[in-house]
Image (cartoon, rainbow, N blue to C red; front, side, top):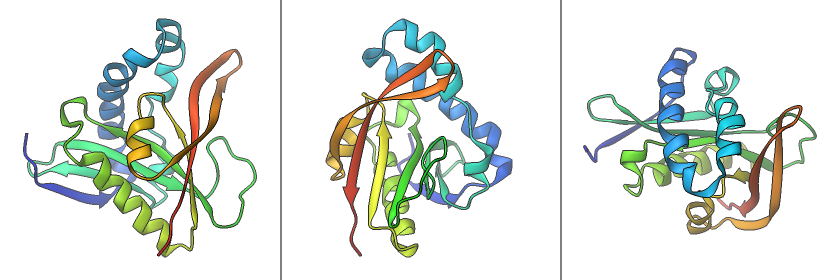
Length: 170
């Protein structure tokens, strides 16, 4: 795999590529940490690209030199699913890395861009609903576990997650 990464802001036209990445990534990477019932019910919902994120200017793509999409992720001022917007807090959104590119700096590069971008917008704290699988990754980036959480996806369908936070300073 090529180790030269290019980071860029996503565009609405990247929707299909991001969706293919999520469908490659989540089933393989989450399988060890989630029961089959969650994989069958929740995965088809969470492995969908979010057009509003791609259009926000706050979602980033990491591409190999040949243009292959290796990772994606971003942030929003509003929490996933909406709700109140505490001042100075942003929310990590839909971070994923190609399973064949894990532990090669792709996720770290994306989160570095997220942190830089949030600082430019006056953000002081990053809130994250992490998968169980990604907790060690976020801990290595300075996030702290707050508590287990359940993300309601549809009536009767929840996704077990871990709420984490990190203070960021300029």
